[in-house]
Length: 114
Image (cartoon, rainbow, N blue to C red; front, top):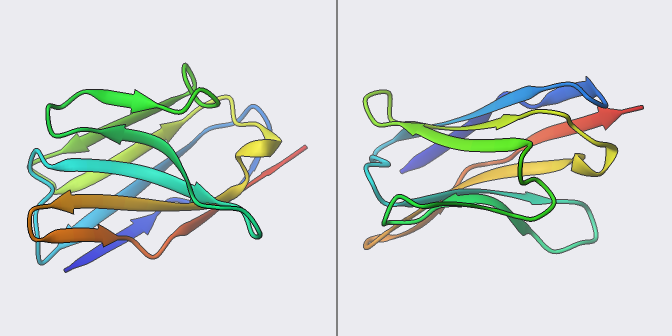
């Protein structure tokens, strides 16, 4: 099982990025999925999740700016990030929770500059 995250990069504050997470060896289906982020020296924190009942939830810090979605046919998870702020700088990880276990992508770095 592999989750391959991509789409990170350097963006100016106020800009947008779309992260993607492609799954191989498994399927996202309608299992719980999410995006997390981590800054060096801090704990990994949840950014957005879609629970198994398909309800999206967002961290307060990103509500109204980020949107999580998935394309079942493409077996890909997305995170659209708009109005990016300096404090959004972090490594972003995708996550999948299935009955067989929990899986993480390798992380993609998002750097927001002033």
